[in-house]
Image 1 (spheres, each protein chain N blue to C red):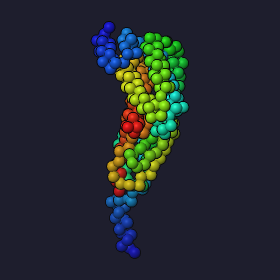
Image 2 (cartoon, rainbow over the protein chains, first blue to last red):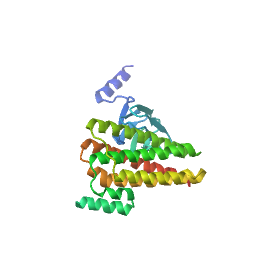
Image 3 (cartoon, chains in turn brown, green):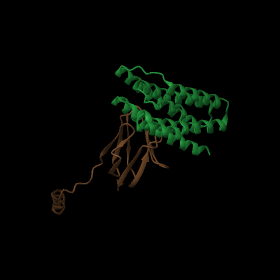
Image 4 (cartoon, each protein chain N blue to C red):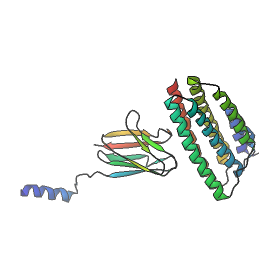
Length: 102
Length: 174
């Protein structure tokens, strides 16, 4: 189907590539999530890298929780679109935000 | 006595943080290290009592978090004083803290059940508030070594987190 080839060629020329799922790192250092706000899309994975000697969590009230042991990493694949605020259940003064595009 | 110290002392007196009021004269780094370490040990000891006595999961979980965090901070503190070749020095503030803590533990030991839970968690809120006030107004500003100051700043964030965590548990017990 030459028409379809033309369509793909046009897409490539325009730089439109179907989005691939990515892994986005959030570092925890001295009780700070950094970057504090992450823009991602459904299907992406957030990987929290804990540099502290303290255990932390990434917790969304009434929803999911990821346990992040000291000096370890933990991941979560995003399944739902929308903005979500998370915090550490052990240290609620630690706050982060994910803005998840569909 | 500098203006900062007068202000710090006034703040401490206003907060009613009696044991720290004696530390109005600028504590030295060896004294600060001792105070910070002592403050952590006190919270671990209170937590161990709670783990032993409480039947409430939220309270026991919180107490376990306290043991884990404060022991981790104190390991870092010991590593740092070793590295800096500083010997922590006992002082009136440390002694005042230890004395107040012993009295509090004796009070808690006499309680059981819901009365124990409430007294323990309420004291955790008050204790962390007190230590935060001292860290912010006296210990961090007085620390001259940069690494000690940085460890105290991390300690303050941990303590502030614990204070909020304790407030949350206190809310659950109501």
